View 1: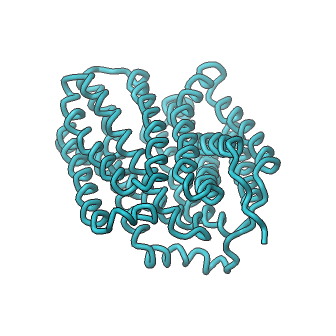
View 2: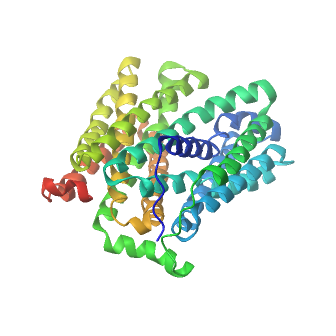
View 3: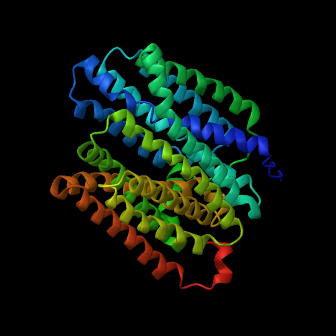
Length: 397
């Protein structure tokens, strides 16, 4: 019987870096859409198709690749996904046409789910009393990757053209792939079933684990709130304040507050407060919408609202993950697939509904929609999570 490798601080930092690098692959393209539209003679909507297909690729990777973390030796799996992401990014940088850029973007989306293999791996290696903190640390790396991807992309494109962004990112991922094979310890698979049984077991987990069902519902609705806000906020800032895209992009940097929320939520989960802290984070999200509404006339109010909504959403996300990973040690990658697929689908629905709401009633309609979904999250949490004794909080849900 093999003993479980120790999760050292160095290994945790390495996993956090990999989480950030891999998820960044999905976001490099966002600041480049205008450049790409000009180069290929496309409308902004057509160029934006790149973001959509990459996200669809990511959803495919969540469903098809992430469950393999329970079925395969994870060091090899992480090495392969990182190397394939590096190849996909290089192909994007050398793409001869927009169509090929789209194809390679899909492939990068599928393989850059490395982060979603690393998060359950951190939960697997951590001791029970440190699991929340470990998940929070790797998620902090993921959030930092999302933040810095746009900044890195903008600077590289300015200095050396848009192709340099993907070529440089490819080199970083290739280095990480080699490092994975050398640094990640050998970890035996936790599942030896057939592939068919492996994938069907994700549905069985939803059937058998009420904690997974309600945490996935809350997570999906919270990410819908995220999509509702970020999809329409730029329209409001341009209309009300005449802001440039560059200045609007700076509001994304406020997202760094999410890293603080991740660490706080992880530590609260380790102390057995995940259930109550989830409610506090959800109510923080609700409170943000009053300030965001007032943000039509006050940038100070708007900025405070952005801070609160990010704190609430990221804090609830880490609390959800901490509780989900307590459920079944042998199925943590499949639990990740179930939870994150729900989370991702919620975000897609939120973005689509936000665009419709803004078209029908402007920013006030978006605020009403976002506040309504936020309140629904609190109602679901109160109805499902407060039924159980407080002493059970450390053991899920």
